[in-house]
Image 1 (cartoon, each protein chain N blue to C red):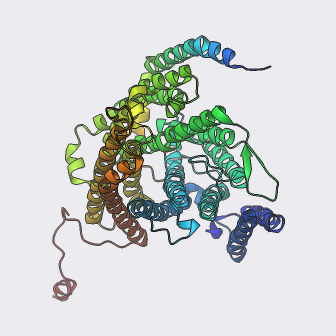
Image 2 (image 1 turned 180 degrees about the vertical axis):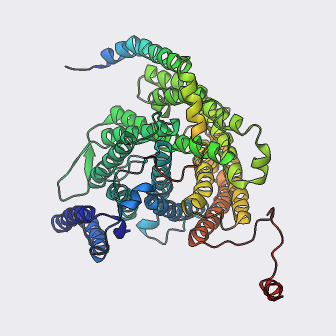
Length: 551
Length: 56
């Protein structure tokens, strides 16, 4: 990796790492009486470790100019492997907390193993660790191909990728120590947030620099989606995390907002995190890898542009549907409902566009699990966006809110759409990146597909049942006008569904582990079995051929 | 200047509506502008072709 950097880039890398090490040292020294000190030491060690890597490769020969005739794919390769590590870890923690709801005493009497700390570790590991690394890795790949231009330098993609993973590590280690600013999906404290801003701005600038070098005049629609993802996530992250630390030596901070403004800002952030992190970026993936893998251009390029602007402008106003029946003014809630319902149009336009692209290539979908991953992802995208619009309607929300229905909805989107489109894209791009003929094992891709699909369906059905029963029990009154069921009654009724959900999650986790193994073996260059439909003559044993040659 | 609740309501209920209508019309005009058609078709087809290396 270091040998691919020019001499200037190696020097710059050392400067950045020294600055980072000094920041870590300062945090460790000033914050030695606080948890921030531990994170300072962690940053110091991480930057010293990277510094050691760069120094040991410092005197390697510089890369030749021949490199400029190729795309720069190594950051994408590392990003894919990191994404697979994060997904196995994140799903493992997710299944752990799922079992924790079945056996609540399973906390080993330790704060770190409580639901409140493990749950954000799960969400951060899967959304940011897996999703984020997958988006960064594929965006570099798609950006270069569609622009017909190489990334402008070798250092900034590594800074973005590794800097982002440092943020994810600070986040999950912080939660286990009890550090959180209590904003859902924005739990990390102020110093981690500042670091992410630096990394994210570098990411956006890198994207623009590459686009500025493009040889293809038209910017392909996938890049629009990726750019919306990068730009809007920067805006959301900065605004929602505006906070004042109690002191420079403490991890704790207080938000700039309070009361209902705080709630609205948080859910403006929260819903747009779904929109731009978990949707826009992954639509970018879909609009490139699905046509490419199917060998057919997208059904309607026009429709993809209309969906893009629809999604970009309508999602911004939908966040208030998270705050129905609260202190938030009624008209703001109604605004959220209206935009949530309208969002069905661009969402279904994208889902339909994907399925219509496959129309005429169904034989490929039948034979190729990779394409099937993407097809099922498009179906789940259509289903969960419909469900989301429906749940945003105030009377429906009265039943669904605070119940497991919401959890089911989120996982229909996160497992069915986000994870499946990512696995489909990975199985497409991994053989291309590592210059392999195909994945190590087509059978394992098939196995992964069925495990993932079965796991998602079990999970989602369990939570639908659980959520609706929960919602109904909470609103059932008896003849004397008081609630018929206590909260504990509803918990007991949930138990079978919690067991089912944990089993569904376990299937999904096993599938991801199989996928990681398959990607790892492909990267190592192994091929398991010869293709079953190989259109070539049967191999002649080497010994037989030598005898023939001797005659 | 104080932006109070009343101002936010007025802006949302007046300017907000027309700005979104204008935006929708703008996007539709761009998408269906006849001379853009070929560019869109080319863009959709071009990504399918194999590209092994950047263009120079």
